[in-house]
Length: 87
Image 1 (cartoon, rainbow, N blue to C red):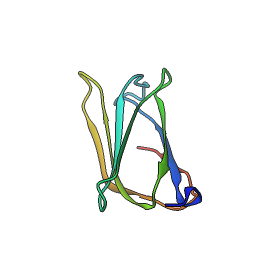
Image 2: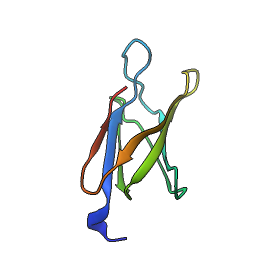
Image 3: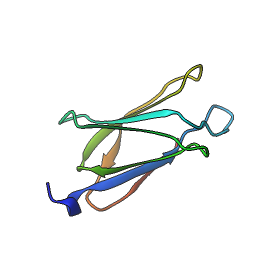
Image 4: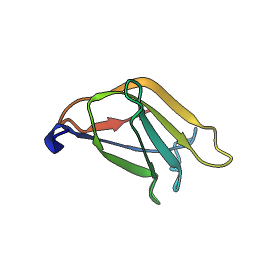
């Protein structure tokens, strides 16, 4: 895959009150190919997953006692179009 055919997804992990959740595990999975990448949110709850091939993805955000958030099939990554996750 040519590097210029990849994209980036970024977002912020928050709880039900809108407070940010630092050090949450964020995993993205391409539903068609099984391609998977993981990262942790920073101290501001923000994360960035780069180098993603185009496709439809599921995102899983989790941390300890907080309820795991799964966004399934809601994200379609396009070539060279960064995607911000808002939920």
